[in-house]
Every structure is written in C-alpha cells, then in structure tokens.
Length: 283
Ligand code: AMP
Image 1 (tube, rainbow, N blue to C red):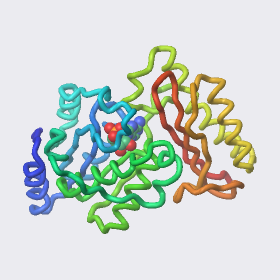
Image 2 (image 1 turned 120 degrees about the vertical axis):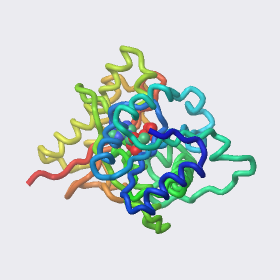
Image 3 (image 1 turned 60 degrees about the horizontal axis):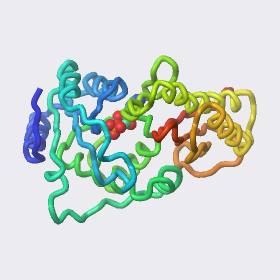
Image 4 (image 1 turned 45 degrees about the vertical axis):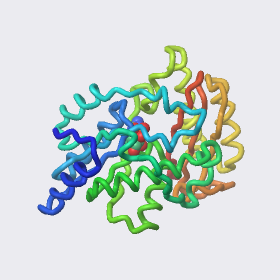
C-alpha cells in the first residue's frame, strides 16, 4: 500500500493507472475509520482494479464552534485497517498542501444543499463541495464511493458532479449499523456509555416513521411530531430537525404518496448525530 502526502504524487499514481486502462475507485474519508468506511473500500475493491482512499479532516466544512480541533485523528490505526484490506493508495495530505496561504476559491453549492443541514450548518456544504472537487481533481478515479449515512451530502455531490460535468461516477453505499441499529460514525466515540444507549433514539425514530408509513399514515406533519416526541423521550438533548422529505430533492411534502426519506439531526450529550432512512411505500 502506497502512502502519499502530496497532491502531485497522488495524481501521478492514479493518472498512471488510468493511462494503463485500469478502473480506479476513490473513497474520500476524514479518517477515524470504522466498518462503515471499510464497506465503501470493500465495494470499491470488488468493482475496481485499484482502490485509493483519502484521509483528510477538512477544516472548511466545520463551523467555527464545531469539533474540528477535537475530531478523532487515528492515522496509524486507519492505515493498518486499509492495509489489511489491500488498499492500493492512501492520500493523507497536510492542511497546507490542500489549503496553502492565499487559498480563496470555493465551489458553490446546489439547491439541494439549502434545507436541513444547510440551515443548521451554514457554509458546511461549500466546504464539502470544495474538498470533494479538489479530491476528484487530484485523484481522477473512475468511480467515487460515498455513504448514504450522509444522505444530503451524497445528493449535493451527485448534483455538483452532474452540474459541473466532473468526469467521475458517483456510487452511493448503504449505511452500516451496529447490531442494535446505531449508524456507525466517527463521532460515536464521543459518547459516554449512557450516551451510547441514548443515541439509539435516532434509529428508533426512523423505524417509527417507517412503521407509521407502512401502516397507512400519510400526514407528514403528524409523523414528524411523533418522531420529535420519541427522540426527546428516548434521550435526545436537542433536535436540529426530524423531517420527512422528497428523496431526490429534499423538498417539503405534506402527504405521503410515494417514496420518501426521513432524516434526523439531533444532539445526544454534546455530540451531534445524523441518520436517515429511505422509506418506500409497500404495495
Ligand atoms: P467521513 O469520514 O465521516 O467523512 O465519511 C467518509 C465516507 O464514509 C462518507 O461517504 C460517509 O457517508 C461514509 N460513511 C460514514 N459512516 C458510514 C456508515 N455508517 N455507513 C456507510 N458509510 C458511511
């Protein structure tokens, strides 16, 4: 497994493989790897000739009062896990090589970035589109793999790639969960043992929404109100949103007539957690 720090070196490796006609997969991450990240790597390994992973805690996607400085950095352990999976290349740059003095050019965001996370984390998605486009330029793979755990992020990236004609295919991968339903996240390690139990309120509320819809409830505002109540009763300290929206555009809907996505962002202890569930109507 090659480990490189500079954009030039990452580009040279991937461009070399592409020129030889190989299919290359890219898995962008912020490190602190868990089984969710590794599922993306495994998917890339199964579909591509070469798999490259980036590990970079991107400062521009964190707000001034968010957890950038305390975000877990576990590079040695991450490299060991990736090496075990036979990853071909890891790009782990320093901040200064991606954001040198004088950096000032940000990628815009599509409309789908506006609701939900866009309301609660101003500028977050501009940081995401900027780093993802930079990584796609530095690592010109055939396919880039992203998790549905970050549902809105995936929608934003799909739109950016389409709108800006970025020559890469975007693959969305299912959320990997702990056996009790908690979506895996690097931030779960912030939780105390009690917080870890409380964090199940997110998957419980999403399952509640799915059951309500399966049993024929169609009034979105009523289901959302019940989700909020369930979150608070089961351990959420505050809720940024608990919504049911259109699965493609993340726009509001009032009555359920087709597939939807339920999305939650809530604080448990001091940790902000997100989760979502796509809900199809059963026939
Ligand atoms: P992050 O390191 O949090 O930026 O995540 C890197 C990639 O892993 C993103 O595409 C995430 O959506 C994806 N990811 C994070 N957690 C999970 C999970 N539990 N299941 C599947 N993919 C995930």
